[in-house]
Image 1 (cartoon, helix red, strand yellow):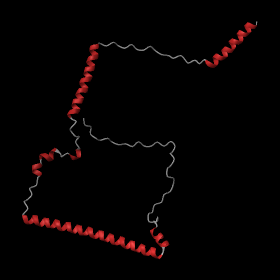
Image 2: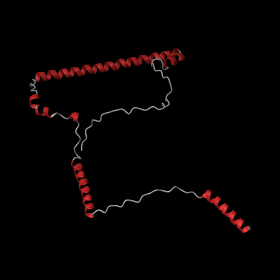
Image 3: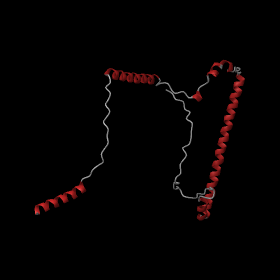
Image 4: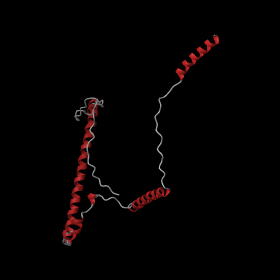
Length: 189
């Protein structure tokens, strides 16, 4: 009896062990693979040759057009204007030497006037900066506190007011608009 009892206890214990350690999976339902159709080697070779020819043709076309720049439509002159160029061209009269000298003098006078105007502006700015420095130096000699108050940046000059957090939390369930646009660029091959 003791041998039978020991075996039954052992079988109970092994059953407990297998229930803890043995894991099973569900049956995988698979179907057999489809058989590949056997193609004639000559047909396969023809298909590969067609692919090669097509790729070679694309390469030749790209090499041919590699040096050509894509035209910019805004910079192209319409063909109608090119055809009518002779009709649209103005015949300018020849200028006399006195007229050319007169125009050159006017250009020189204008350049001199603009130069003098620029120099005068720089002189005014220099005088203003010098007088400002002199006034600040006099103020510093009188009182250091007044000088520091004078050179302090006045935040009231810039009327900027910032309110609220720097970054805001996202809005729940917000769907951002994608935005519509019409793609109008030309395709060049």
